[in-house]
Length: 301
Ligand SMILES: [Fe+2]
Ligand SMILES: [Fe+2]
Picture 1 (tube, rainbow, N blue to C red):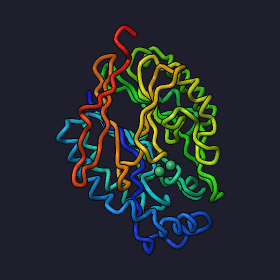
Picture 2: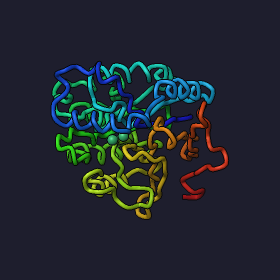
Picture 3: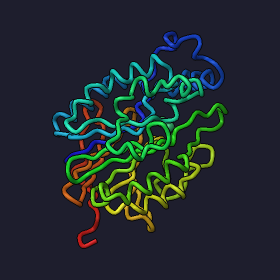
């Protein structure tokens, strides 16, 4: 089974298309930030998504996972446009699972209006609905005979413009802990998804105003992953990191579309073992790093 994990495409729409009612507070600052430079580094998002779908087809990807930040400002036009841009990827035979990033729920009005759910609700279906404790969460999907995906939501609005931190509600962490021990999941290869990075590339926590506030608690629960991986985005750098006290490696997909740092991960799961290769953008197409393959668990583990 081949799994593609990408994140943080940050598809923006022309500012003139943002409804007037979507402009209060932080979104003005976010828009100014975009205008001042960030937007230039997300200049070819739609073209890159077409190429990412070409990669999916040519590389026989079975399942697509996206860890959020589809948009820049979480407005309705952006979410609608992002949905259209990723729609071809939803043809993957084992499906498409998506979670929101902080930019998709940029302000409380987006949560109140259930905007992400309105545009991506069909990606949030759960096979083990008895574990739902917080709206859709956790989303649990059983994939074939040997794999599973468990997604917990760490994205929340941050009306204070100096903060972009996240937190996984305790009820979701409790449900994740119980699900990882469920006989229906326990012996599968489990991908645990959230938006925020529990650790940076060097194994240290992200900074307080940008990171996952309860990363330690999340990682403690993830020690219950017997075989699997922890996937996330938010940090726009594609990396993997191993923690000494956690058997599941961590993979940050970075941004699939930000100029000069494009990346994603491609996993081949074979029974209880997996191999990860990094995806790169060569200026016109996406391709895999075939010479740098990370395999786990170690034979005999
Ligand atoms: Fe992002
Ligand atoms: Fe983010």
